[in-house]
Image (tube, rainbow, N blue to C red):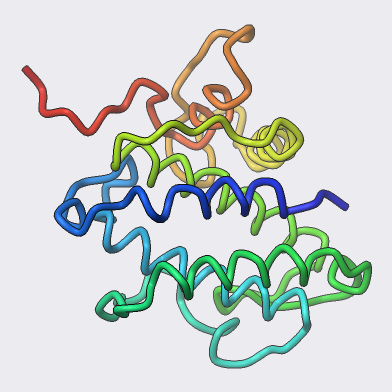
Length: 194
């Protein structure tokens, strides 16, 4: 059972560094602006918290790519609290057992926990890159993310669940390897192309 706490804490450290004038900025995840990414993080932290608690309902049954509401005024405090609740919920052994639901999909608790961890690893990186903040990633979380992405990849198509894998050297840092496996370019920057 990996501990989601260290990675959740790293994402929390980014929140105060998101300036209001950057909410419309693009992220490495093309379907989301910074505001959209923050809304996605709000939704997924609530959904996977409830999935861990086996509190199935509106949060766990919602489409994660559905229409995002406007970002609430208290998004920083709410997301910080939900990241703490997410980490705490997945510290229970019961969370990792049996079946649960997230994003409207029924899946084993152990899979849901790994997906939740992977989501905060990758979307934390997305947010950090989009807002020009440092991001290292928790080493244990990065290894778990690499394992999950490697298992989900269709080797013959070189696709991950997110899209075509971006090749990075085997000796690259763990974070670059996870990002590449997710179909993102580790060298993505928010700066406009020259």
